[in-house]
Length: 88
Image 1: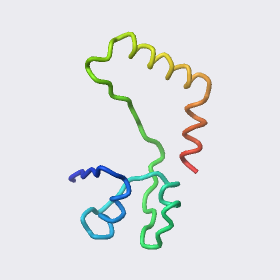
Image 2 (image 1 turned 180 degrees about the vertical axis):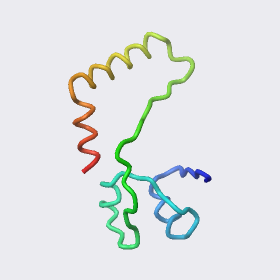
Image 3 (image 1 turned 135 degrees about the vertical axis):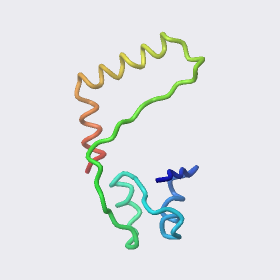
Image 4 (image 1 turned 90 degrees about the horizontal axis):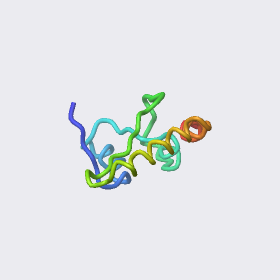
């Protein structure tokens, strides 16, 4: 399997319809917004892992603050709330 990236998400439906790619992974709400009868949902990914990459020059204290903020969001239930909105 080869992975192809695009500089803009908007290019992927065109690539799919032109046969340049076989599968596109996107959010369900984006597919609904496109309202394109030629495109159909064929598989639903139940969960995804996301991350944040930092330049090597970012100091350890800043990275620790980001991580602490993430843990706070998780503990407060905000991450689950946001994920729930994205899965509609």
